[in-house]
Amino acid sequence: MRHQTKNGFTIIEVVFVLAITSAMLIAFMATIASRISRERYSDTTKAFADSLRMVYSQVENVQNGRTGSISDQNKYCTLAGQAAALTDPSALPNSGNADDDGYGYAGRSGCAIYGKLISFGEDSNENAAYRVYDVIGRAVEFRGSITGDNVITNLKSVYADVMSYVPVGTLGNYSLEPAGSDYNYYPTWDAWLEDTKGNRFKGEILIVRSPVSGAVHTYLLNKELDFEAFMSKFQNRPSNDLSTVVNAATSDGYAMADYLNTENDPSKSFATSEIDLCVNSNDFLIGISRKNSIRIKADGHDSSAIEILETDSEENKCN
View 1 (cartoon, rainbow, N blue to C red):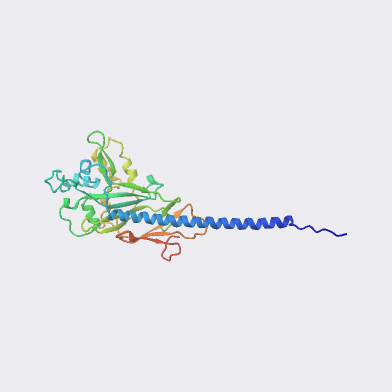
View 2: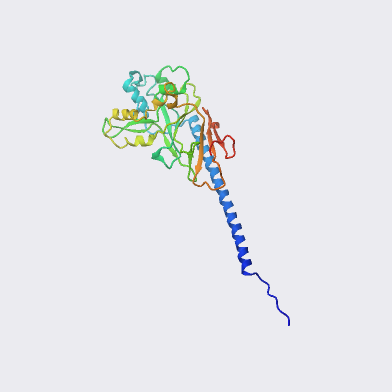
């Protein structure tokens, strides 16, 4: 009598095959997820760098984003101009007649856009990587002769600032608004910028044209100034008179002119410095041991000042 042999897999063999298949699938999915994360991280870094290059482009190719008439709202152009006018008679603008140095002619306001200020770490804009403000000041011809080309000193001479006062409600009441256009930059993939020690980057970067030569320069201020939060204190509050607005800006440390002085204390002034911004993200999965770095070269003159240092670069200081 012949015995019939049955072909097939035992339960142990089936379980073993399923275990191997599952492990391979998990490894495959982890590889795909890590690759997607790396691509997102790379895209985030490039988006950061491109957005900063765009700021340089906006400084080189000026567009006036301010609505309304500057001469009607604030003939001193900025808060710093008004503060100077309260104490310095020579800072007073002319009467606004067409015969006075061209003020009043079509297309002339007596104010000029000198560049951009990038404010990092404003708590009032915590979801934004940074906020960009126009830097506005008096046109050079309205201050007479400016000698030399120390950009910081000359910006102070033209009362450069990012804030302006505007009348609100009843005559004699004022509020604070951005002197020109302003906007937030929101990063992709839940990313943010840090310093090389792993702390959220806070500070101000000034990218401006020289009032004399027109050449673009870059400066850093290692101080957090939450302009948006400060201005909001005075918005929609018509009880503030002009002296209150001006004096509060000075006493609270928001008088930009105080930081446009490299002679008294360079550590508290806008100064030339190389800047390393480390890119971090909640989408940062395993497999990346270091962070990408975005470097702004010292005293950058155009968008070529922005450089991406990948994780494997020896110059990358972001751990």
